Image (cartoon, rainbow, N blue to C red; front, side):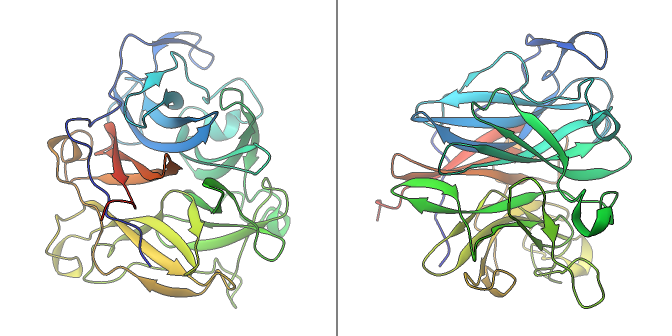
Length: 345
């Protein structure tokens, strides 16, 4: 049931690296800054007008240390999925808008993007004010101008979860005539989300989401870390899930615990990639998951940078020219791609 195998295109990666020359008039700092001069990573991906578009997280040099600098989201386009032409300024960033309390001064992080059949692009991203991470929603028709809708769970249960830690959404999609679009199950939109565990949420409008709860009224955990496995510390949702004839395929990022609780086959604290299968008629029901990661840090730039334990962090997956392109962050410092060609035997 799993999708693969994904391979690194020869001599192609990393496909996006920091660019100090790209300057941006920052409304938060009221000056020009090098918005992507320090690190670029954790990319979303989608298809528009016959091209692949990658939306990637970029950090300036305003501080040192993970989570200390300001993040903005940049846009790149490609006709082959590998060679990227970048826009010079970010398309999503902390602004003097009604999201200021949620996005200053940490910014906008870790996008995932999917599209409806009629061409509405839906981005889930993390709002980070350096105190609390909140999963947020934005929409666009052109991938350049985005309307911010705010925290995804703001209205659910009378606002009970608006200040709860949340991030990493994987909306359920399906392939229709070779195009990957947002799906409905039982008349609703569904998404998996979460970092420490996997939860499920539903929506009727793609903007307001209601997380599922367990019998105690807490977040329902449909998948959790496993002792002794590559995902012993975290199971963090990756790119948009895919509805297949076997079930719902969820790609996710597993973090390996150090010591005896982790998997000694893989580096302590490294991020590797997993796949899990959920029931198409009951998306909360986990059917199966891979015991071993299908993709691990191997290249030098995947094991150096901000996160030297090693990271291949997947957030973008698109079907393009009969191939699957998987986009990922490398050690919180670069962007790379892996390709799976189902026609190659």
